[in-house]
Length: 96
Image 1 (cartoon, one colour):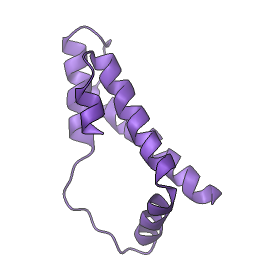
Image 2 (tube, one colour; image 1 turned 30 degrees about the vertical axis):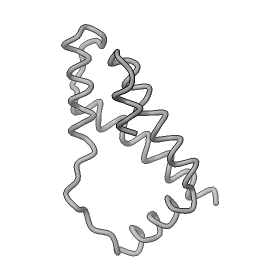
Image 3 (cartoon, helix red, strand yellow; image 1 turned 90 degrees about the vertical axis):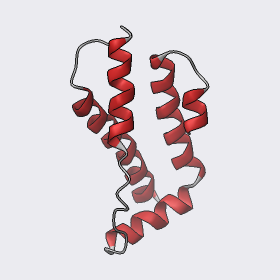
Image 4 (cartoon, helix red, strand yellow; image 1 turned 180 degrees about the horizontal axis):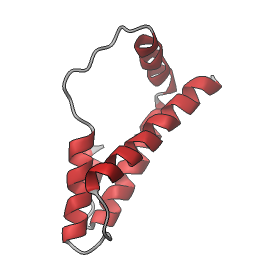
């Protein structure tokens, strides 16, 4: 995913790469994603401290500073975007 994001120049394209790579990963690794959801549901997975929000908020903030994105709170938007991505994985999990 990081390679795809770094391979493009604009922040708009970086955001598109972020979203598409996340969603493609979910679709291509459905069995693994479902296994992780089952582990989480049973309380067997604890956070390793990795923060998925901060890098995305930084990308959004940088896009604002570059004039590519409008005015919004980057942290709130990053949380909303992660909710969409995580929701997609839950939808896939519940569909199987």
